[in-house]
Length: 472
Image 1: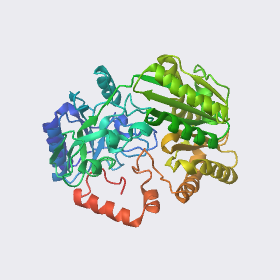
Image 2 (image 1 turned 180 degrees about the vertical axis):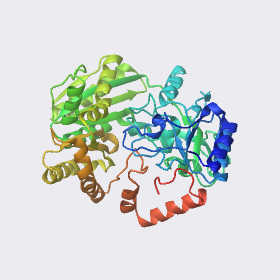
Image 3 (image 1 turned 30 degrees about the vertical axis):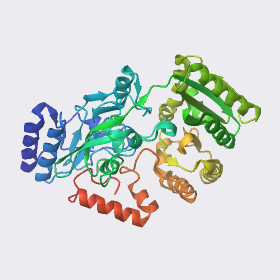
Image 4 (image 1 turned 120 degrees about the vertical axis):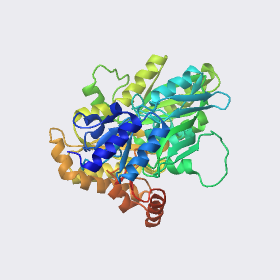
């Protein structure tokens, strides 16, 4: 039962966004539970604004009623960053109605879109104009640009194009006071003070609510070459990466590594997917995007691959001969998270390390985990080209996955994160901090950095009403 003050706020929100766009009561599970089904909350209401002006008005109304706000896009996050708490007092601000493409500037190679635009729609809109928006990740059919920027999403082409931050040239956002900051010009050079855009990107809705963005576009590559290769060791994979970078240069766009058990899970849960090579300790999916021609791309790529075979870095290889085959190879890689979820609950780690330390980390940490938790299965895959591994721990075969998670998650995390920290790595490469890793961040981050982060939060959101309990 809502209190009189809450009822008054709901009435104000209905006046702002329309009664049909203020959702209350039962049936809000799609908003109140995260993608992994690990974080469950209860919102006072879900407000669904259709414009930046409505977002600003909602923020002002919540501030007047001393109510905190949880922004949410496609709700595909993995760290509990956009789920309301259990109090039933927070307003969940869903930005999915704000999904317009405001404009494409072909000459400037930019596109301005609203925060609720689905990533795949942005990619398709660019492609229709012969251009490329290079951010690409498994959830692109449902994640939104606002969420991508709020978490500084990474994905499969960071090696060439960078994270979401590098692919954004301007932002429009609403402050904690309900004011609109419009910085959508899309300039590649603008040295006029502090970079508020980069401050907001990656802040997970704690400093302001992103409502629109001007995104950087690229010319479509003339040709793509995709190959799957098998290797005996992760050391060989690192050496193959160095050779590929030397030979292919900036045209190397993807270098994804997959451990044997990760692909075993795909074979088990998705037997209809053909795996064209014999199982091996490690498999790499490599892609080159060439600006010149298909013939040039094939020639350069095949030369690099022949050298890798001659040096014994690569066991076997298959090149995609069509777009359909390329998509099938990528589908293998993108099916790993789904296969792992079907196998049961697991302990996820989204870590980054200097590429030069990855082989050592994997060998040492695999051994430490087996010694401490005999029989655990390691689902290791990710973006080797930029040093980002999804180093996940599955319970022993036949074990109770929920019980293993409940009893051992903290100890497993400590072991893995200690190993990462010793090697100069990060506990969050692309998923963010959310609520899941907030306490871990306190233990791992420099005290000076944390002090500065808290000072920024206090300055921009003095009442702590924007996505409280996240990041800091």
